[in-house]
Image (cartoon, rainbow, N blue to C red; front, side, top):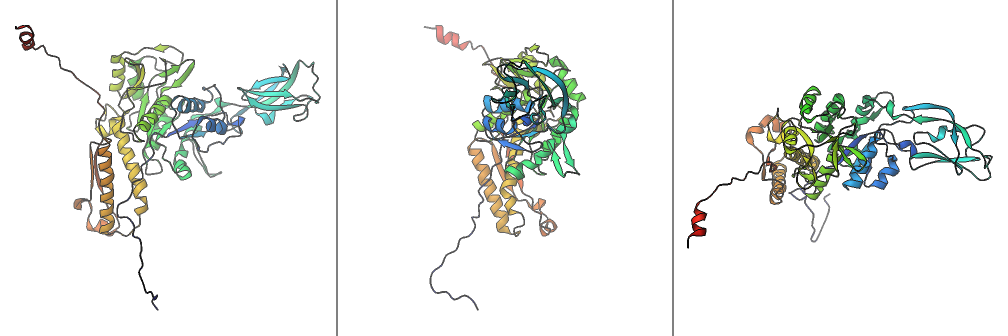
Length: 475
């Protein structure tokens, strides 16, 4: 029997126009080694951090950036550029990447012994004495510190202690660890493969892939490019790659190295050389990630503006051996013309210089070779996927199609009004949607968009006008 009702009632219908979900932009995904043994941190697990303190607490910190390149990124992203969130993957496994340090005598000064940061606390053995009774251990200031306990058995006049321990060995990390993969025995993912676990775990799209100290290896760079082109099977990002400054010491040799390493994808941004701030040396890819994130943030989280000609946090450009590199405008433009981003000190301090992805000059499609334009296409695509994923498996009706077309057009018009796009529209075209395809539940929406190109060349034409002579000097 139908429900009996007498009176007035209401119900709510779904809004026909969908509110857009904009994708994240400028979120760095950084793979490398960190001193996680000092804080009991995770191995091969994506860790999202919002600030410097969170990152240090989760991953540890050391100024030895050669062995622990993740620390370089922690410092750059949070201290220099103040961008967040950042996702880190540490591949240093204390259970795997370690070595045994032979027993030796260590000086005891003011009740303390300074052991190297690499020492694994749980493996320290002091001849004749016990931890917890005679001494304690803790990590601090770049060392593992052994501290003598009051009331213990270590005499005050003891000048040295005989100690043995195991230590982590960052030099044991290989390209295979960075590239990672899937372990059929443990059923776990590792390395760069973990980019696909960021969105399921945190609900954010990390669109900048960085592997400082490793991206100059051709196989690592190739995998980074492949992952950037197909994040979670649907999203798109950019892989920031460094040129090997031990092998390439002159700017004119960079294009040949690029060609030999097969770095030519639209998803790759190639950087040369290293950059220095005070005594700290950074991979340009790391500072480029910070610069991109900050530029996106300054533009409302949208990557429409090029990071080129924006200030870097540096005071010189250098090679791996410390040689200072002084590029003039012609040198820098030569690198740009070969699809390489660099650092230039010309007017107003050191800036990131270059608008081209690594596919240039072989690929001259503007949506591929301009960094900002290419990133805008990826960002719009990512945003459409996030917004309309909820429409999948709805009834294929005209109302559904019209609601998608209307809401996308409203969003694109908003981007045009904000000058993030020069123009944009979506069409549901009959020639792209056959009856058989619609019967199979397949609909194609054709999106036209034109991001603004960077004002790469401004040309002023100067001409002498003789008429001003007469106008100025005639009585």
